[in-house]
Each structure stands twice: as C-alpha cells, then as structure tokens.
Length: 576
Picture 1 (cartoon, rainbow, N blue to C red):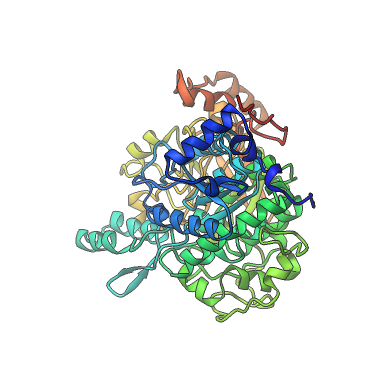
Picture 2 (picture 1 turned 30 degrees about the vertical axis):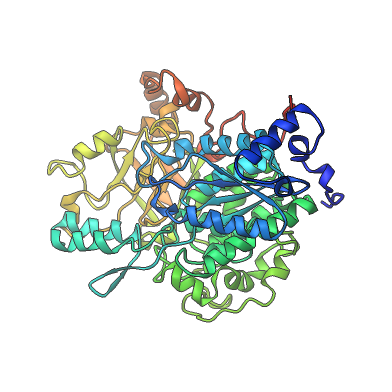
C-alpha cells in the first residue's frame, strides 16, 4: 500500500512539538530539560526505541549498547530518538512462564507507541517471547516499525566439544540422571555452554522467531542470523536506525508488510529451518493482529510441502554461528525461493525476492541444496483426533523415527508437581512402550503454558538405555529440545478438554504420517468420566493473572487475549 509521503507538519509528533500553543510549549521545554535543542526535535521524525534490556535477561545484556548504536543511525538520518524501556521477558528466570507475560509486553509496546509522540519504532528484541510480543504490539499500534534482533550467542565449549544451549542441556542432563556423567563434568558444562550475550545459538524459539520475522519482512534482510558478538551486529543496528527514519517519511507500516502471503513465507522459513513448535502459537497470534489468515491447517499444509534445509541443532548438527557464515537466512531463502511469495514487500523498501536474489551459500553441509534436502518436509506436524479435537503438534524431525507410529498404555500425571514427585519412583508402572501424559499444563492450567512438554524419561528407563518415548501434554516444549513430544493439545485439560479424562492404562495411538492422535476409549466411557470431572480453581484472585485467566485464548488461536485480537483502530490520544 502506497501512501502520500509524510511532511514535517503531517508527522504524528508534530501534534506534540510543532504547534504554537501551551501544551507544545510544555513538551518542547521538557525536551530542552533533557538537554535537547529546538533543532533536535523540530520537524524530525520522533523514533521510539523500545528496549527490553534488563539484568534479568542475559540474552539482552548488550541492548544498552545496541540502543546507542540505533540512536546513532537515527541521528544520522535526521530523526529524533527516544529510548523507552519496556517489560523484559527473561526466558530462564521469569516464572511461572514468559508465555504468561507475552501479551502483557505486547500491551506495553502498543500503549507506549500510542501514548508517546512516536512517528516510528525500533523494536529491540530477541529472547523467545520478546520478538512476537513487540511485533504484536507494534502491529496493533501500526506505526512504522523495524526489528533489531538480539542475535545468537557464540558456540558453547566443553573439553573440545561444541555445545549448543538447550539441546545439550537436555542431552547431558539425561546422562547425569542416568549416572553416566559426573558432577565435575556437569559444572564445566555450566561454565562453557553460554559464552556471550545473545540468544540460544541452536534453532530454538529465539532463532526460529527472529528468522520467521526476517522472512516476514520486518527487519533488515539477514539480520536474524548475525551473531550477537560479531561486529556486523552493531553495524546492522545503526543501519536499522537510519532505515526507520526513511520508513516514517514513506509511511510504511507493519500491516503493509505483514500480509497473509508474508506469513506463509514466515511459516515456510520456520519449517525449512527445522524450527521451534512455539512458532506456531506466536505466528498465529501475530497474524491475528495484522488481519492476516493463518491457522493450524495452513501450518500443516505448508510444513508438508517445505523441505528441511538447515542442518542446525536440535534437528541437525551445527549452530547459528556456523549457519551465519554458511550464508545465513538470506542464503537459505535463496535456495527456498520457489516455495516463497517473493513479491512481498519488506521494511527495506524492496521485495523479498529482490533481497535474496544474489544471496550466496558457502557450505552445503549446513544449508542443503533444494534438490538434496535433509528431510522431505519441515519437521512439524499438526495432529487431530478425539484426544485433540482442536489440534496438537509434534516436531517429528526431532523424534526417534520408530515412535512416529506408536500405540501404548498411558501413564498419567495430573500436574507438574505430580510428575516431579513420581517420575523417578522405582514403583512407577512404566515401560519403554508407555505413553507419558501430563495434564493441567496448558495456557490456564500451567498457568502460562510452561515448557514442560519434554517430560523427562523415568530414571529406571534411562538406566536401561531408553532415550526417547512418546510424551503428550497441553504444555509447550523448548525449541532447543527434542524427542517424541506431542504438544499444545487443545482444548487443554484445565478447561475440560479430552486430555483431562485420560486414565492410567488407556491405550493412546500416535500416527504422525496420518496426522492422528487417538485415545482408544469409548465415547460412552468418556462421557462418564466427563460427568465425574471437577474443574480446578483459577489460581489468581486478582491482578494481571486474573485478567489473563479471563481472556487468554487456547493454543490453536495463538494464546492471545480475546480483546487484543483484530485490527479495530483506536483513536489517537487528545493533546490537552
């Protein structure tokens, strides 16, 4: 969509700074109080830098510096930068789950942009939920916006072995529980697995979401792949600062970029990367803010036709640093070109096809040729059946192939506390053929749908050499994890979805090729169990938790708040 080019008098910030009235006098005088001059603010686009830096979020430890580099670019291009700190979602420290607070950050971003004199925004994000949250908020505000991603951290190292955050944690923790790894080695890994600022350097949720948003067209091409500690990263930040000023003059807004076709590019990219299952929830929520069409069935259709090209853990061998030097996201997209909507516009003013036209790939072992893919589909499947009427998902490329068609008796845990108490008990009635089931771990049951879906293998099975088994829950799973884990079962058990009525010994059948998840219990027996079921009380009597419980949608709808969905405009604030 092309709009008339903005003029100084048509800028949104002109209503704050440009008028000859009492309120504008006050706004200008307070800018001068901060050390700015009339020349700094007059007739220049005011750019909000939404910064999610925090000591509680080590992935964003460098954002203080990156904000200054963004400011440099904004000044260079003739803009006026305003840094605005927002809620940060530190994946490792925030409880009960960052997912519970994604929508709160989205609201924080939207209202900051609406209430302050911002003409455009630079979104500093990277750690898992900060990317979708800031994009969701900026899309709802619909002011020109560009994303500066945190970038992946450097490779981990332990005794000459390359470690990947998350993926190797789960791998070696299983060995620790099995008694094959001593405490000294475990502590050395702890010292060597996270060697710099930046997000997980595996294809976890952070890199999946930044890559998807890159393909969506909301950041400078290839920005998602740059390691956080590489000197290209601050150069990219300054370039984004320069570009956002031009975007304001052009009046290029998020909904101009984030079409249904662009979201299909984002999904296709996530699938070709072997990306996180969390992308399904986040992209559906983001599409809902943009007025685009995206649901679970479209996800599955795109996954079925998309080859797996990225050899990155947990589905592959390498890490994000290797991926960047092999050609990065633009290199992968150049090989994926025939699967993309290449005419989609992007924030740099060119189409996706133009951005990837000359992109090279330097290592076929890391980014596979399109005619020699690592897998024939994108590695994520959407399942349906009487156990998941509204859908469930599995990252089948990260599972043991023998488990993709499997039937076994259920071993049921009613919540995470029950799981922790019994999973390693010697008397647990479990075999390698069992299906572990975790209830009450969804959007409301968790609460916040924590990453509990990679249920631990019982210790007595680890001792027998078992390293994968079918696990089912209404929870999420870390994008860095792996295994035959069925996730996002909807509707969730907390609200009376079929998962709530599974009992020990029930036979559950998983058939990934057929996309089926079946509980072999009669309809009559299920009706009896439902009649006897008593719902749990909501955990939050007041505050944000109460609002969350009243308004969060189910996983198949993106876990957004029902009152935040859609594109209904909100009036600009009055300047009184």
